[in-house]
Structures are given as C-alpha cells and as structure tokens.
Length: 193
Image (cartoon, rainbow, N blue to C red; front, side):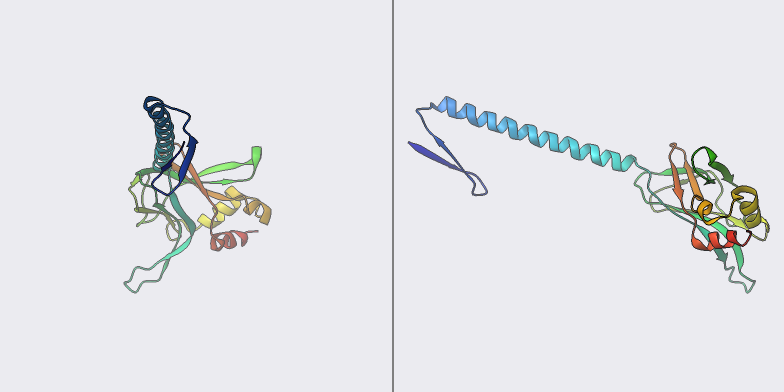
C-alpha cells in the first residue's frame, strides 16, 4: 500500500508503507520536525550574530580637502583645510582625534592634526547616528599650514609618495578610519615641490 503526504507548497513525500504502526509514523515525523527546528535555530543564530556585528562596527563617511567658508556678511571667503566626518552607523561614535599617515611599511610616519578655526569642532566629540563634525584649520590663523604639511611632514612630494598619504580618524573604541585626501588638497601640496 502506498501513501502520499502533501505539504503546504505542493511538494509530495512518497514512501512505502510496509506495515508501519501509527507510533512508528509519529516517530518519523517527530524526527523530521526536530531536524527542521534545528535548521531554523541555526539560521536564527546566524542572523542574530550578523546583526550584532553590523551594529558594533563603526561606519563613518569622511571627506578631507580644502573648503571656503562663506560668512554671508560681505567679507571675503575664508579658505580652510577641513576634515568632515559623518556617523553612518547605528551606534554613537566618539572621535578622539584626527591625523595623518604617509609612507609604507617601516618608513610609514604619523602625525596628529590640531584644529585652529573659529567654527571648527573640537576634540573629542561624540557623534550620534547622522550627526557630523568639521575639524578645520583656518589659513587666516595658520597661513603656513599647507607648506608645513608639505615640507615638514610629507617631505617627499612625488606622486608615488602622495598616493600613500591618508587622513586618519581615531575613535574611542580603538578603530582608526583612513581616508585619502581629495584632489584639491593633493594639487595644493604639489605646488611645494
């Protein structure tokens, strides 16, 4: 005698009924249910771990370049160096400092960037989701900033070395985000070759 069991999606399971008792049939279905429950539990654990890791990760959008500040009172534009940081992650992030790295391997050098502008965000700053900070250096306050960065820190202004130049954002959870500067800043540095 052949029995057919239909599932919700139209799939069918065929097996030969060789005189199985009702208890034996129930045991088969209990085993199948146990396996399905185990697979569902495994899938739930994988999804939960993935979601937890995404929430834990620091997600920042960072722009590094030259900006002009428009006061709106008829005064001339004020040129600034600016690091703009926006928190795209779901957790709040504290930015402890920003800085620079240049070079490769054991020849890599690092520097911390101070801020010097009236409208600059000061370190440290906590950024909730969607909030941003602008770390700026005004060329009115520090007129030699570009030259100091080019000749004092970067030194080797060849194209190969400038490709290794990155701005670094240091967070309170120990993660450092590295971002290449925009072309306007790189071109301004090349003028000091």
